[in-house]
Length: 241
Ligand code: HEC
Ligand code: HEC
Image (cartoon, rainbow, N blue to C red; front, side, top):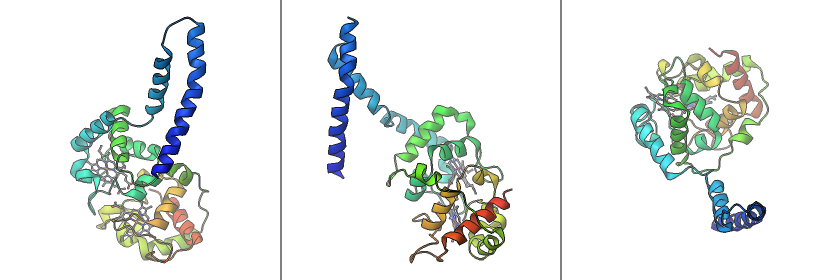
């Protein structure tokens, strides 16, 4: 890990040196005077700008504590039947920024998750930077979202859903209002924002330290095949409400 970091830091440095060179030359030719050292550092700064600053994360934490902590709890660990964890490691690694930001902006109609559009893009960006600062796994959301769409038999999916998912997620995926701990995965607020890959990966691997166990592999609560999982996703899409 640290070797990898060192290597990428060195590569980054070399790249910046190479990239910095023409800028430096151009500056000299134009006879305008940013010192070579300055143009090098401004490049370095713009490369670092991609990492959210401590200031942005602190602002996100402040906004989180003002608007979200009441339901999602201290440090966003969630509470069964009240609000899901927002720092769960599998969740953060599979949820794209788009999923997070649009869910925060639009909320989930028919659930306790209200829309927070009034926080503005910058406020929502800050909250997402705060949530992401808890990440423990690499962000694989682009790969997850690029998975193929689910093709299955909704009638078979319904059987599985009623047998094993409805206890927690409620009949028709109605969520907490049915008295369980699973979110409203049959409602549009979730389905319109979640890709099939995101739903599929969540069903397979679950979310550690929550009641959402994985449903594939020897550690799974039930060992559903890829096809059975796609049947369930097809069923959920068919009952979206
Ligand atoms: C009144 C309680 C409440 C407040 C306040 C609240 N949420 Fe939620 N949030 C919920 C509930 C309940 C859900 C799950 C809804 C469902 O059943 O699908 C949720 C879901 C979410 C999700 C989707 C999580 C997942 O597992 O897919 C995100 C992201 C989220 N909330 C972010 C926020 C942020 C950020 C704030 C503050 C700006 C916030 N919420 C404030 C209750 C709340
Ligand atoms: C023992 C209860 C339980 C069972 C059974 C269960 N889930 Fe979950 N599921 C949860 C909980 C709890 C969460 C949210 C985790 C949290 O609260 O942080 C969740 C989250 C999810 C999510 C992500 C939803 C979101 O809002 O981001 C999907 C998708 C999902 N479950 C699908 C399923 C499917 C499909 C089944 C049946 C094969 C199933 N679950 C069975 C409890 C359960």
